[in-house]
Length: 423
Ligand code: 5CA
Ligand code: ZN
Image 1 (cartoon, rainbow, N blue to C red):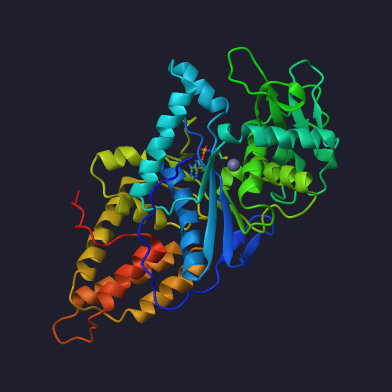
Image 2 (cartoon, helix red, strand yellow):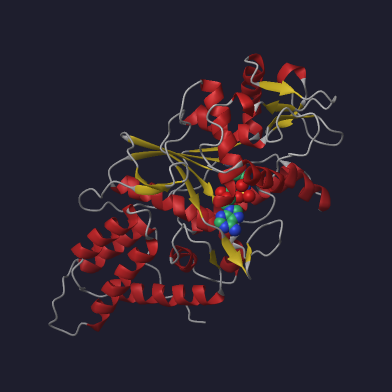
């Protein structure tokens, strides 16, 4: 699939430090150790509705990973999927009397626009589930051949992975069985379905149902792919096993990332799928997780349509740490607009407070588990000192340019625009 255009990335003097991030599997902050090319897979959208601020926050967190790695001198092979066939897409299309293909294409196009406006670096491979069906089928077939998967004996043709034969099962989330059963029921699994060998067994292939789209499948069973094997397949086809970061929101810790890893590790008989599993916390609204199914959404495109500067949206979301669940509020946006205006006024000056400590501080903060609030505080302080300095103060001529480049390259916030209108 087509991704979106890349924003310009200024080059900064010297390399930045090694990135440390929190790995869900090891339950601690760990140093990443990519080769020349860092490899990252981030779970993409299910395109049945517009990008909300929760999605945006998650993609911004991984955009920081990308930027910190590049600043450290790595090339980055970034992969993202689009779940362009799944239950929620079909349900929404049915509700609205729309073709599911048209719905998916339209919402994916809107997502590209939102990501472009937010200056998110695009994936190198942007891959849909539908275009991956033949490779997914080959994988399901392989798991059946190995005796690691089974066809449910109820005439539906549904295929499940037998987790009892997966030695690594449970190591990504670290959850106990009761927690797994609860999340499985809440997040697309079917623990109460009769006939499964284990209640947690995840579906690999769903046999054709009346009125649903279908493709030729494993063992000649027409149907459509399961969710976790989609991401396992797309990652294996693009960046292979043992890649550096698997990313997504914390609602993907279980079952999705657990089973993507289980499928891929079974298919290749190697470990690990990812070297670190990194999860962004949830953005909420009015005390609840922002989600398409709850309908309590603030859309990036709606804010853009109201004339909100996308750089203010970016700053508002990065003002909280990616691992802290947090609420979206109008105040957050107002503060970010004010901050953006202040920063823009400061970098428009002919001279500013010394830039070297700001560059070093930004690098230190962001490489330390993506401490964006800490990074933002450093720029606040620099802008305050720059704007407060009178003529003849200790100011450097090149400081505004260096700080603007650092803020652009590391935080992804372009400061060459006008100060946003105040509300
Ligand atoms: N297509 C699958 C992943 S393969 C999916 O989860 N799609 S999604 O559209 O539901 O979510 C896209 C991304 O946004 C996921 O990483 C998800 O964890 C994240 N996300 C969803 N809601 C929120 C939220 N309220 N706050 C933060 N991140 C969220
Ligand atoms: Zn995924």
